[in-house]
Each structure stands twice: as structure tokens, then as C-alpha cells.
Amino acid sequence: MTVAVNDDLWSAIGDPTRRRMLDLLLADGGGTATTLSERLPVTRQAVAKHLAVLDRVGLVNGTPAGRERRYQVDDEQLARAAAQLATVGATWDARLRRIKRIAEAIQRSKEQ
Image 1: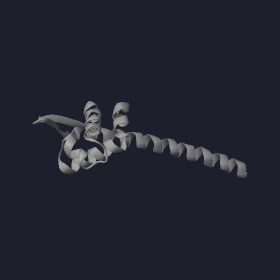
Image 2: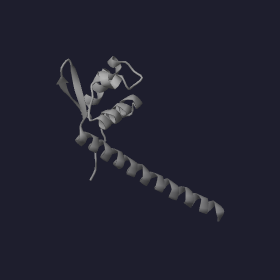
Image 3: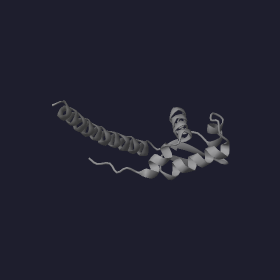
Image 4: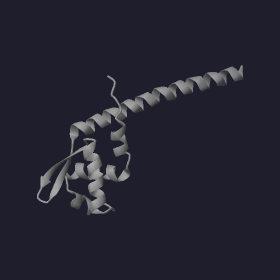
């Protein structure tokens, strides 16, 4: 099965603050911009912007909770991201094996 790689998704995950936010949301079962900002070295406004990016790529879903939104990780989208990562990793592993075989063949030909 081929998994299409979503560049926007990986751009969102590429940011260390957003990865930490995902970790916190997973550990806590959800949170708001306010609760996350209390545990991160960024302002509530910065957290809200990061959450908007994660929401846009489908990694989190926000629901109204009083004056704020409560965010939870979308397990299905996270599973798709993990599948994409596994596919990319397997592709690079295959490329590296081919490079190694070529380098070994060159080395053998020089030794003869």
C-alpha cells in the first residue's frame, strides 16, 4: 500500500513547539490554549496560532468550551501521519541499501 505524503502535515509536525503540544494533548486527553500555554515557554496567543496550524492539517479538533476552544488529537489523522512516516522511512532505507551496494561494488573493483 502506498501512502501519499502530505507536505502541509509534515510542515506542521516539523515545529518542535507543535510536537510538544501534541504530546501534552495526548497525555492530558485535551486542552485549551490557556492550559497549554501554562506548560509551554510561549504565550497563549502563540499557542492559539500553533493550534490553528494543527487544526488546519487535521491533527487536532477544537470544540467550543466556554470562552475558549478545547482541543483533542485526532487519532485517525495521527495514525495516517505515522503511516506516512513509516513509508518515508522505508523508502529511505531502500535508497541507502542501494547506495551501500554501489559503494561496495566500487570498492571491490578498486581492490582488484
